[in-house]
Image (tube, rainbow over the protein chains, first blue to last red):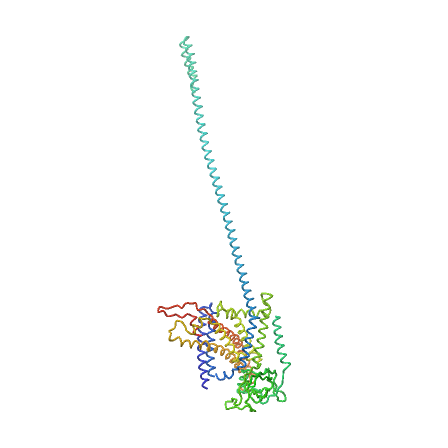
Length: 62
Length: 166
Length: 392
């Protein structure tokens, strides 16, 4: 039960973080469309790091 | 975490390690090395061809520029030559004209001098004629005076009337 | 085209050989195989996510009410207390809860939730405690050719076959033909978009082979996991752990002096803080980085398989409330949508694993020839590379 609540909190945090990453990346691409490729790569890396963190926490709590 | 550790199979890990090592070794030896080296070779070939084309293009451009320059020079030379020729012509004409003028002038002056000379000579001759005539007349008068005075005067008169000074 | 046809023939041959020689019918005792309730679905998904000792395509109940399994058994290779023991997995008769005991070399083995246990001497049946843990049996080292190992072997052979073919094509001509035209851009993509930018022009050549192998290995296994063959290789923690540890070994052993200096005795930090930071850096480099690599891949694939199977299970679980057609339609639409996402995830996870491996290797071999800029007080202004290094 408690680990489900923990998982919920983790997902809220990860969702917020992913939203930030995606939103900022969109802003960046809108501002500089020619840098879209680089921004996307960086975005995917950061998203992957965040995802690793979130999954790590989920697994540890399981 | 507990389920994760429980699911971890050391046997599968060992088998996977061996297989992955083998796979990496085989792939590197028989696939990636030849593929990557051929790709590199090809890319270098393409780069070389592009470079050569660029070089040829630049040389061509140089050649064309050279041609253009030569042509320009030839055109310029021709123009200067024509210009010079024209100038020469004009100069020659002017010189000829001047020469002709000078010659004409000298001829005219010479002619004038000659005319003057002739005139003077003619005048001198005339004068000598007149003198001779006068002497003759005077002689005749002198001869006639011995016979008739009146007649002599008449004669002189008529002679003088005849001898008009021209 | 030819190479594609050949590899297709090769695969078909493999499948046919297995099918024709070893379809075996077995009557399993209490494992009905029918999936109707939520609990059964949960159990079925949990069973699928684990490695399996036999390769079954499908199972059905015949007219006599017997449960038949179509598939083939795989060899079980164990390192027990008495040494090496081998037998075929068919001896377990598809039992997965420890009730079928196999006796070999005077030892008794039972399979519980896809894991093989060795019974203690004298025991004749597995005893379970309240949490369903076996009390009189212990896990043995299991080197069996499991379903995952079969997947690894098939994909490894396929990769070797395809890419050595591609390599041979270059010998005669400069441009590949047929299926090689599909593979070549992928190789170039990994080299130019993953290896080169992250490791640097100077060192990338040494590591490209590893990165290419890992990329195609993970990608193809992820894709095979989406087929109805039911592989779940990249969802096995042992497999992803092995991959992550390979990356760890590579970057730990190729790290230059700067790398170790920045971990153990970082310049530009007060001396008192250095040991504390060194501990943090060491843990980060040797535990957190590989752990995040292995967990990311494992969790993504596990989550993907769980979601797809759960969506397919809507068909059975909700057929009472939505009707057969409604439940099937809903399940079909949702699983097709998720399948598209999973195809993307299959590529993305291979890309990210390779990318992060390249990044870690790149950080280990990077030459810190850049002088740190100093502000007015002589403190170092961290540049982007340092920030990234600290962040990861």
